[in-house]
Length: 222
Image: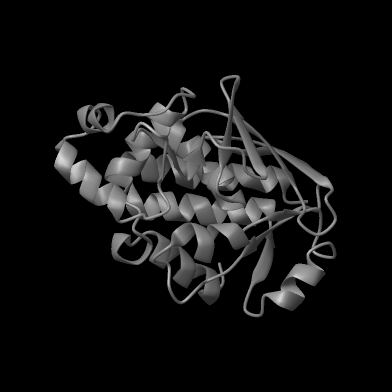
Protein backbone atom coordinates (compact mmCIF):
# COMPACT_ATOMS: atom_id res chain seq x y z
CA UNK A 1 0.00 0.00 0.00
CA UNK A 2 1.46 3.37 -1.01
CA UNK A 3 1.60 6.34 1.37
CA UNK A 4 -1.05 7.98 -0.83
CA UNK A 5 -3.38 5.00 -0.48
CA UNK A 6 -2.69 4.59 3.24
CA UNK A 7 -3.61 8.22 3.87
CA UNK A 8 -6.77 7.89 1.78
CA UNK A 9 -7.94 4.78 3.65
CA UNK A 10 -7.23 6.42 7.01
CA UNK A 11 -9.34 9.43 6.02
CA UNK A 12 -12.21 7.29 4.74
CA UNK A 13 -12.19 5.40 8.06
CA UNK A 14 -12.49 8.65 10.04
CA UNK A 15 -16.09 9.90 10.37
CA UNK A 16 -14.90 13.48 10.92
CA UNK A 17 -13.27 13.33 7.48
CA UNK A 18 -15.72 11.28 5.41
CA UNK A 19 -18.95 11.60 7.39
CA UNK A 20 -19.35 7.83 7.11
CA UNK A 21 -20.29 6.04 10.33
CA UNK A 22 -20.25 2.24 10.13
CA UNK A 23 -22.59 1.98 13.12
CA UNK A 24 -25.21 3.40 10.75
CA UNK A 25 -23.83 2.45 7.35
CA UNK A 26 -23.60 -1.33 7.88
CA UNK A 27 -27.20 -1.84 9.05
CA UNK A 28 -28.35 0.58 6.34
CA UNK A 29 -26.54 -1.41 3.64
CA UNK A 30 -28.17 -4.61 4.86
CA UNK A 31 -31.61 -3.05 4.76
CA UNK A 32 -31.06 -1.46 1.33
CA UNK A 33 -29.81 -4.80 -0.04
CA UNK A 34 -33.41 -6.02 0.13
CA UNK A 35 -34.12 -3.60 -2.72
CA UNK A 36 -36.65 -1.34 -0.98
CA UNK A 37 -36.50 2.20 0.48
CA UNK A 38 -35.63 2.23 4.18
CA UNK A 39 -37.66 4.07 6.80
CA UNK A 40 -35.56 6.04 9.28
CA UNK A 41 -37.45 4.30 12.07
CA UNK A 42 -36.49 0.89 10.64
CA UNK A 43 -32.83 1.93 10.55
CA UNK A 44 -33.03 3.10 14.16
CA UNK A 45 -34.59 -0.23 15.13
CA UNK A 46 -31.65 -2.05 13.50
CA UNK A 47 -29.19 -0.12 15.68
CA UNK A 48 -28.95 1.01 19.29
CA UNK A 49 -29.57 4.63 18.24
CA UNK A 50 -32.63 6.83 18.47
CA UNK A 51 -34.38 8.23 15.40
CA UNK A 52 -32.95 11.67 16.20
CA UNK A 53 -29.42 10.26 16.42
CA UNK A 54 -29.90 8.43 13.13
CA UNK A 55 -31.05 11.62 11.42
CA UNK A 56 -28.03 13.51 12.76
CA UNK A 57 -25.60 10.87 11.55
CA UNK A 58 -27.23 10.62 8.13
CA UNK A 59 -26.98 14.40 7.83
CA UNK A 60 -23.19 14.08 8.19
CA UNK A 61 -23.29 12.58 4.67
CA UNK A 62 -25.13 15.28 2.71
CA UNK A 63 -25.18 13.04 -0.38
CA UNK A 64 -27.50 10.53 1.34
CA UNK A 65 -30.43 9.89 -1.03
CA UNK A 66 -34.09 9.96 -0.04
CA UNK A 67 -37.33 9.37 -1.91
CA UNK A 68 -40.32 11.72 -1.91
CA UNK A 69 -41.59 10.11 1.30
CA UNK A 70 -38.36 10.75 3.19
CA UNK A 71 -37.24 7.13 3.06
CA UNK A 72 -33.54 6.40 2.54
CA UNK A 73 -32.70 4.99 -0.89
CA UNK A 74 -28.95 5.44 -1.03
CA UNK A 75 -25.74 5.89 0.89
CA UNK A 76 -22.90 4.20 -0.97
CA UNK A 77 -25.33 1.45 -2.00
CA UNK A 78 -28.28 2.93 -3.87
CA UNK A 79 -31.55 1.99 -5.53
CA UNK A 80 -30.97 4.63 -8.21
CA UNK A 81 -29.01 3.59 -11.31
CA UNK A 82 -25.32 4.53 -11.49
CA UNK A 83 -22.53 3.25 -13.76
CA UNK A 84 -21.80 0.51 -11.20
CA UNK A 85 -24.42 -2.27 -11.17
CA UNK A 86 -24.19 -4.41 -8.03
CA UNK A 87 -26.25 -7.62 -7.99
CA UNK A 88 -26.55 -9.50 -4.71
CA UNK A 89 -28.90 -12.42 -3.99
CA UNK A 90 -30.54 -11.74 -7.36
CA UNK A 91 -31.35 -8.15 -6.37
CA UNK A 92 -30.08 -5.54 -8.84
CA UNK A 93 -28.68 -2.53 -6.98
CA UNK A 94 -26.07 0.13 -7.68
CA UNK A 95 -23.17 1.80 -5.90
CA UNK A 96 -21.74 5.29 -5.84
CA UNK A 97 -18.26 4.17 -6.89
CA UNK A 98 -16.09 1.27 -7.97
CA UNK A 99 -14.45 0.90 -4.55
CA UNK A 100 -17.88 0.48 -2.93
CA UNK A 101 -18.47 -2.62 -5.05
CA UNK A 102 -15.35 -4.22 -3.57
CA UNK A 103 -16.06 -3.27 0.06
CA UNK A 104 -19.78 -3.99 0.37
CA UNK A 105 -19.69 -7.79 -0.14
CA UNK A 106 -17.66 -8.05 3.09
CA UNK A 107 -19.98 -5.71 4.98
CA UNK A 108 -23.04 -7.57 3.67
CA UNK A 109 -21.44 -11.02 4.02
CA UNK A 110 -22.80 -11.78 0.55
CA UNK A 111 -21.26 -12.46 -2.86
CA UNK A 112 -21.96 -9.90 -5.57
CA UNK A 113 -21.69 -9.60 -9.33
CA UNK A 114 -20.49 -6.22 -10.52
CA UNK A 115 -20.91 -4.72 -13.97
CA UNK A 116 -19.43 -1.36 -14.81
CA UNK A 117 -18.07 0.48 -17.83
CA UNK A 118 -14.97 2.50 -18.50
CA UNK A 119 -15.77 6.23 -18.61
CA UNK A 120 -13.11 6.54 -21.34
CA UNK A 121 -13.71 3.65 -23.74
CA UNK A 122 -17.20 2.62 -22.65
CA UNK A 123 -16.04 -0.99 -22.58
CA UNK A 124 -17.57 -3.24 -19.90
CA UNK A 125 -15.81 -4.54 -16.80
CA UNK A 126 -17.26 -7.49 -14.88
CA UNK A 127 -16.13 -8.55 -11.42
CA UNK A 128 -17.31 -11.23 -9.02
CA UNK A 129 -16.49 -10.69 -5.37
CA UNK A 130 -17.59 -12.17 -2.07
CA UNK A 131 -16.62 -11.95 1.59
CA UNK A 132 -13.71 -14.26 0.80
CA UNK A 133 -12.29 -12.00 -1.91
CA UNK A 134 -12.29 -11.34 -5.64
CA UNK A 135 -12.95 -14.50 -7.64
CA UNK A 136 -13.22 -13.19 -11.21
CA UNK A 137 -12.21 -10.07 -13.16
CA UNK A 138 -12.98 -9.49 -16.83
CA UNK A 139 -10.86 -8.21 -18.46
CA UNK A 140 -8.04 -9.43 -16.23
CA UNK A 141 -6.10 -6.15 -16.72
CA UNK A 142 -8.91 -4.01 -15.25
CA UNK A 143 -7.95 -1.26 -12.81
CA UNK A 144 -9.70 1.07 -10.37
CA UNK A 145 -9.03 4.81 -10.13
CA UNK A 146 -8.47 6.53 -6.78
CA UNK A 147 -8.23 10.16 -5.67
CA UNK A 148 -7.47 11.74 -2.31
CA UNK A 149 -9.39 15.04 -2.29
CA UNK A 150 -8.56 17.74 0.24
CA UNK A 151 -12.21 18.11 1.25
CA UNK A 152 -14.52 15.10 1.62
CA UNK A 153 -17.51 16.99 3.02
CA UNK A 154 -19.50 15.88 0.00
CA UNK A 155 -17.95 12.44 -0.37
CA UNK A 156 -19.92 11.47 -3.45
CA UNK A 157 -18.92 14.45 -5.59
CA UNK A 158 -15.37 14.84 -4.26
CA UNK A 159 -14.40 11.16 -4.08
CA UNK A 160 -16.93 8.64 -5.34
CA UNK A 161 -17.58 10.30 -8.69
CA UNK A 162 -13.87 9.96 -9.51
CA UNK A 163 -13.51 6.28 -8.58
CA UNK A 164 -14.12 4.22 -11.71
CA UNK A 165 -13.33 0.89 -13.32
CA UNK A 166 -11.17 0.93 -16.45
CA UNK A 167 -10.35 -2.02 -18.70
CA UNK A 168 -6.60 -1.43 -18.25
CA UNK A 169 -4.03 1.15 -17.15
CA UNK A 170 -3.73 2.18 -20.80
CA UNK A 171 -7.48 2.76 -21.00
CA UNK A 172 -7.18 5.01 -17.92
CA UNK A 173 -4.45 7.26 -19.37
CA UNK A 174 -6.83 10.04 -20.55
CA UNK A 175 -8.48 10.09 -17.11
CA UNK A 176 -5.10 10.28 -15.35
CA UNK A 177 -4.07 13.16 -17.60
CA UNK A 178 -7.08 15.15 -16.34
CA UNK A 179 -6.77 14.11 -12.68
CA UNK A 180 -3.32 15.06 -11.48
CA UNK A 181 -2.63 13.28 -8.21
CA UNK A 182 -4.99 10.46 -9.10
CA UNK A 183 -3.81 6.88 -9.49
CA UNK A 184 -5.05 3.55 -10.81
CA UNK A 185 -4.51 0.18 -9.15
CA UNK A 186 -5.36 -3.39 -10.19
CA UNK A 187 -8.74 -4.66 -8.98
CA UNK A 188 -7.10 -7.09 -6.52
CA UNK A 189 -5.11 -4.23 -4.98
CA UNK A 190 -8.24 -2.07 -4.72
CA UNK A 191 -9.94 -4.97 -2.93
CA UNK A 192 -7.04 -5.18 -0.47
CA UNK A 193 -7.37 -1.45 0.21
CA UNK A 194 -11.06 -1.96 0.94
CA UNK A 195 -10.22 -4.90 3.23
CA UNK A 196 -7.75 -2.70 5.10
CA UNK A 197 -10.45 -0.06 5.49
CA UNK A 198 -12.94 -2.51 6.98
CA UNK A 199 -10.19 -3.90 9.23
CA UNK A 200 -9.66 -0.40 10.65
CA UNK A 201 -13.33 0.23 11.27
CA UNK A 202 -14.77 -3.16 12.33
CA UNK A 203 -14.18 -5.38 15.34
CA UNK A 204 -11.51 -8.09 15.79
CA UNK A 205 -13.71 -10.89 14.40
CA UNK A 206 -14.36 -8.98 11.18
CA UNK A 207 -10.70 -7.96 11.00
CA UNK A 208 -9.66 -11.61 10.86
CA UNK A 209 -12.24 -12.23 8.13
CA UNK A 210 -11.13 -9.35 5.91
CA UNK A 211 -7.44 -10.15 6.41
CA UNK A 212 -8.04 -13.65 5.07
CA UNK A 213 -10.15 -12.27 2.26
CA UNK A 214 -7.39 -9.90 1.21
CA UNK A 215 -5.04 -12.83 0.74
CA UNK A 216 -7.64 -14.61 -1.41
CA UNK A 217 -7.75 -11.60 -3.73
CA UNK A 218 -4.35 -12.63 -5.13
CA UNK A 219 -6.18 -15.18 -7.29
CA UNK A 220 -7.16 -12.46 -9.74
CA UNK A 221 -4.12 -10.19 -9.69
CA UNK A 222 -2.41 -11.79 -12.64
